[in-house]
Image 1: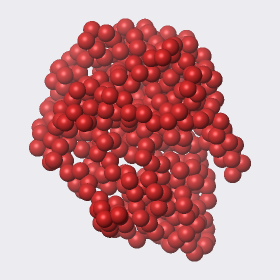
Image 2: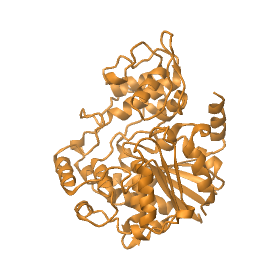
Image 3: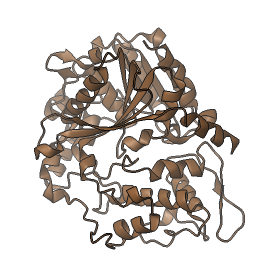
Image 4: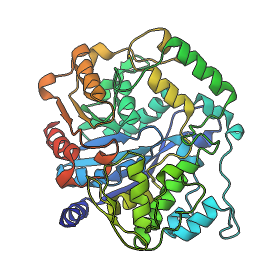
Length: 428
């Protein structure tokens, strides 16, 4: 409890600079979607900016805890978290009220709120999203980077978590009409992700097969595989909101048919315990466990991520931690860019990762237990194949941490925060 209190006190030192909309690149579909959304933390007069991109199925809320933490601990730094253009599809209006019962009724049970019912976006109504791939995402991201460079700011670092880290590496090697992306940057911050083998790539046959499936399938990633791409994010956010507002009450969603059986506790539990049990079962966080007794059974913290902090992380709105409508084409392209070279796969997908050998900015990379060494192998390959200054780069790991722990665990036990802060302080 004391560690959590100290961490929350630090967060209070980093004022939020606010949320802004940044004009995006012209892309497939109506022009109203040519925009991205940015959450900012840190002093308005900061001369350095760290721009962060979320990973597969993640949103700007992924950085809602560590963004202000970094801004508080690194003098003269602002942190910007990017929500991609598909955020415009999300109806977070009832989550914004902070009422979990209203959210559960509206999003999960079809109950009206103020005369409105939840109408999720049907992929068949937005076929243009099938072309929202890495080239468009990087053109959008470049507009954010250039906005961060404006106003006399001297340095912009680019990073991300998981596939967001892969996006940052792709940006550095990308050819923007003849200008390499790394020239916009002062450094890269890779949080449990990257390219060059950090995650599996694609063969030419696999790339063709995935494009063929996309041509007739949903444009959106479907994490649950049941044809409701928005459900994973909505259910997780509802769980978080119940755990945040009524942690010790009987778990409102324990009997929901939408909760996978593997994530359902064997005894009646509290809202906080249901969140902890389901998150631990999904293996995205290292958590504690159910108390040995109680009716309903409460949660006992352990591991790296306290359940109260996880609830705060998941309940945040409108900049939430999950992307309800992540484009399938973006996932295909990030996997296809894995080699960062010209070849049959990158040619097929139209990827311009042509400048690997020229990249010359320092790299920070952090690895959890997810890839069994893949993230740091990819970072070392990046350094070896480029002009990245090895002496100014930092490679760190905590193999007791799960994939999402770096985004939520408090500073005293968060090896990512402890090692990235000195790196950020040293980049000028």
